[in-house]
Amino acid sequence: MAKSMGLMAAAASAAYLCREAFVPSSGATEAPASPALLRGAERVGQRSTSGGTVLPSLCGAALVASAASSLKRRKAACKAFENEMGATLPFKYFDPLGMAKDGDQETFRRRRIAEIKNGRVAMMACMGYIAPEYFRWPGYCSPSTDLKFADIPNGTQALYKMPAEAWAQIACFIGFLELFPMRQEKDRIPGDAPGFGKLGLPFATKADPEKNSRSLDAEINNGRLAMVAITGMISQNAFFGTTGPDMWLPGASAFEGELGVQAPVGYWDPLGLSADGDVEAFKRRRAVELKHGRICMLATIGYIVPEYFRWPGYLSPEKGLKFADMPHGIAAVSKVPLEGWVQIALFIGHMEGYFWRQDAKRAPGDYEGYGFLGVGKNFIFNFEPIEFKDPEVKKTKLRAEIANGRLAMVALMAMLFQNGTVGTTGPAMWLPAA
Image (cartoon, rainbow, N blue to C red; front, side):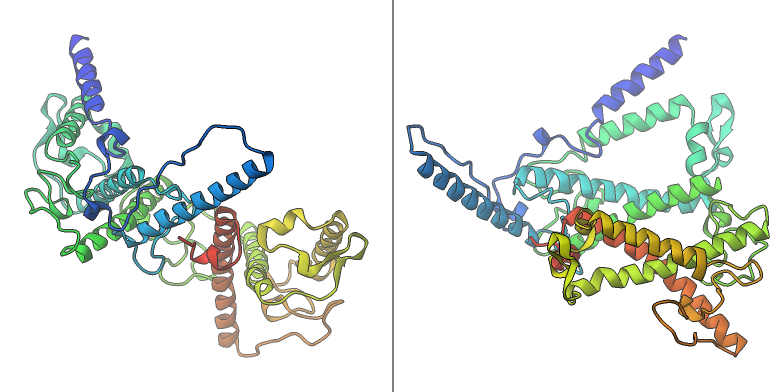
């Protein structure tokens, strides 16, 4: 009992020491006096106020002028960050949430330190996810519990096998690094520590933001990629319960020969939804996939076209609402009148219940009177559907439709997210302004 309490106390103490391991506190990251550490940044001054009795109109004018002046200063401060390390193509300075719009240099420096540190940890973690599949240290991890390194599973399962003593050692090691060789000093650029210089390498020379700009940019970008990669690895590991080949390329399935099974992932079913081999369930899901893919291909085009073309006339003459007055993207949801939503619902119901009714005897996504891409005769169009007589050409076209539909579903989700984040569907949605 005493031993366990001692280990817990040691782990708690070490955790306290390394509490700033990944997100340093603002106190430890004050902005340095040297402008080279935050190139081009300008400090945003505090707006002063004066007392006295002022007429309401003059007071309002002063407030407007003050707000305009503050906005200009904020834009100038944010624009200054465009020259910082990591502002590379294709996005340059990318801050869709506007977290640096106040131009606070200390906050920007603290976040940059955290980004570099997390990126370095993620790069090592990615290698650590792969290396144990081919190499393990010899000997024991814990002689007292007879636990060898070779006996510890890889990936997330290792968390449950590590003894308390090992966790205490890890916490103490991180605390030591944070307090001594990896401490961030005010006169060094973010990520450049006394014991770890350029690129975070032990005993490396002090980084020069001008001479080493290319390698420093590369480190930040690789760190960003590694953070995304390790998140994907952990998710994939959690789905499959393994870090072996099945984590990357799942085993064979009864549906390996179906349309849509193509490189690089082959038949991809990470959740094992078709593991039971139920043909009817597979056909139903395939029909749903095709239908959603077709809708998303139309929706993706529909997100772009209104930026250049709008229907003439009125959407709702009774309300005096023109098509040209409708906002684009998510904002249109709140502007469409109730009658418009009723018409949309009736149209979808009619298509689903009559034209796009799935016949069990036909292949998924194949409807009577409809051909390639689900286009055919209905109350809007009246022409013969496109049909491909050559079986190989037909397969190629159907594979392309499925693949493009999948891409469109991902693209539309990204458009909705970006629209919701940035609040516009214009150019700023794709390349946010400084």
